[in-house]
Length: 129
Image (cartoon, rainbow, N blue to C red; front, side, top):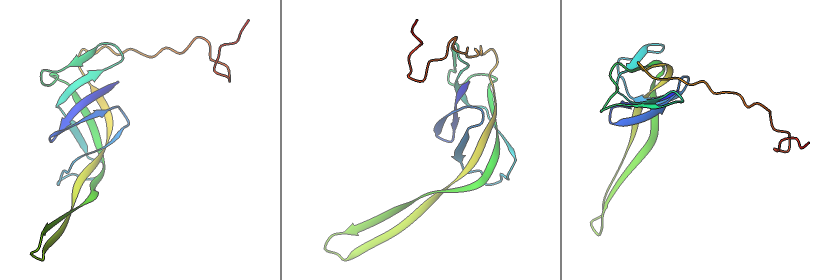
């Protein structure tokens, strides 16, 4: 089962147990529960539930793993030719790392995967008779 959630201006495809870096939450602490209620799409193996724009009553539960994670450093350099004018700055965006604990979508059909009837041999082909 997976869901597509919106957080900030980004969308994430998540499953239970996934770790995702989402928009920074200043007041969060380690182990705190976060609830994402903007679920855009969900699938449990059968037909997908698609929101218009969101699925009513659907939610994704997560817990904070790391309250503050720094992203990669972005460097900005501005040069004006023939003026000996240079400016160099940098920036690191902050994120919050969360682990998805539960996905709940009302009325979603969840289909369990069936195991194959006969496992393939080591060569990848079924045994010949």
